[in-house]
Image (cartoon, rainbow, N blue to C red):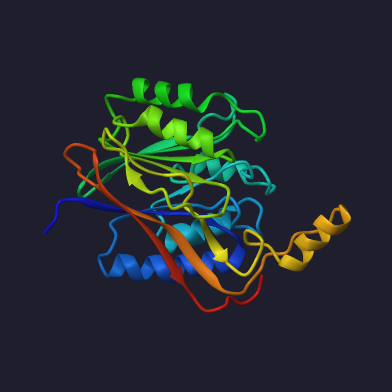
Length: 269
């Protein structure tokens, strides 16, 4: 039996179709022994904007070991106390000092200690502290307790920012995965010093959509320029992400494989 830890990194959950796809897929994969640990970005899980405490508990119960967030962290009212209490749900570590919640967490597993770090980009995004220096500080300050297996979710718009951050952290973390654009990239690879990398994991939600939202409402926005409510799409549901194999003894990645699991159409929005 391989000693490698198989880690599932899942792209942004969008609404109830995405939550359903995650629950069905990850429950099955864990029961079948296909993956040992699961990290999912859920910043669009609540109707396409943010997360709630109840939905956080739902996603954790469905098989997520760690939930990461992004620029929609504060979109749902009353979410802050849950972030303070639940260390398995992360907001970006490079949010301004004093923000509620946790930007990284370390957990023990049967195959070793794992640290997950959540970051947000600065290019074409709302103001945030430097993700490069923030990660440096975490790795320096937490070196006595941090796991050898370190997983980084960088929630960012610009491809260049994610690529450069991956190279900057190469050899110091086990994997760097991008989220936020909801479009899975094909550049999954092991970087020269042993870090698994992909620019964007993709999306867990309806593929027959505009990044998870109903095409008719998005088209109307482009045609008229008028504000309207974006409705979560429900057709052609899928889960996207990667499976990263990591050596617990070294923290180096041994493999990274893209996945796309298609499901039947979801129900309500």
